[in-house]
Length: 586
Image 1: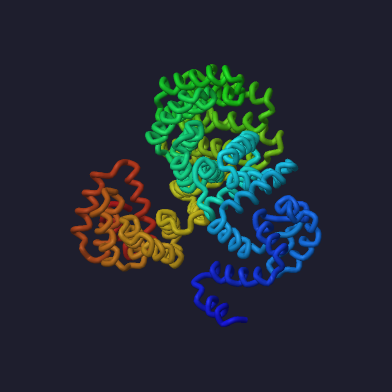
Image 2: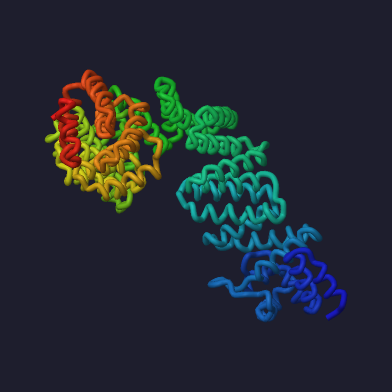
């Protein structure tokens, strides 16, 4: 090993540089024909004897021998099911050197690879062919890339499309591929990122695409339309409309009626979200005419369904007519997914209109349809929506009954809710009504169920503490109140609970301090009753009597139930029995 070789390795600044030094040194030891074949083998992602013969026709008669000799080299490894490949770092180093030193040779080998892989139209070979064509002949390669990418996108072969765009992006990253092919690679990458809801990444890829397709109006229009779709998802409606308008003008300029229809339909979607229904309907009408003119029944069906949503508020019958037409078209073209999806979309649209009861049958119908086509996960989601809506309707009724102080019936309704779809609001509502009925043990259980769903909710902890106080379970109440103080110390309800705990323990001055805070921050007359009793217990009977008289003037008939509270406190603190009688509350 020469000192020069070692010095170069020591001086190398990166793994890539060291890899090239080692690779170059090894190449120098190989026979000329094997060395030539190594360079060729670096071009494709994998190789076998036939591929090598196609890449080096001048060495074709020796391909078998050279293929066998390649397999003995340290940087050659098995490519499962297809032959062999060069180790990633070695291949990258060879390609970088070849591109920088001899682009003509790089393109010539790539052209032979593209021609060879075109002979077999399996998916992986089709991708490999386009990968080589875009670098060997950028114009023709870009066109093949566009045609194949569009075909796979339209036929929902997203895995294949993703593999294709990723292979071309390899050239973009390593060999500064520019122009239409680069724009296409980022365009398809943007579509993929959008499909998996990586909207920021999608927007970045599409912006990169737009920077490389200035001269291709058709592709630029598609990239603008896709950008609008991302902006629409991100709730940037005005920006989305601007991109759709740009795309629309370009589609019209190149005579793409299908692209024009898609841009118009997307514009209608945004206008519908903005509640500009008349404008949205006009765009949908234009799009529908174009979809029918070009024979795009999928576009026609989607537009009919979108139009129907515009009529949901004021003309449900017309909405259902349009949905039925859309479903008929989806069925004709074999789009089984869109049938339940659009039915479910009607449910979501009605929820946005605050018409949950009308939405429920659409979700139920969508669930049945999803079940029929084997999409059980979506069926489960739709059924969950049905349950959520049913629970919300019963909960609203329970809340109404509670507001009307029909507590006995409210308890029944809250219990129905927790059987259908347990929620914090339902358990808390049940606890409130049970507490109003002085069914404290049951109220404690209800609040505990609510807390199991949200452990650190201060209001739930305070509610349970209040029940524990009424049950005279003071040590447990103290633990809940201490936790409430940790989470929400300055809340007047927290101080009120602290005040009652101190009152029940005969700590009258501490009780007065907490009740004074509650009175200063809230108008609830109950805090004044508590403060009066604390003052009385602390010896200030005159002030206590004045406070009670003032509180009683403010209290409604219902608030006079505080008398019962006084009696309960007096039972716990016998010394306050005189206070209750003296204050006229016993």
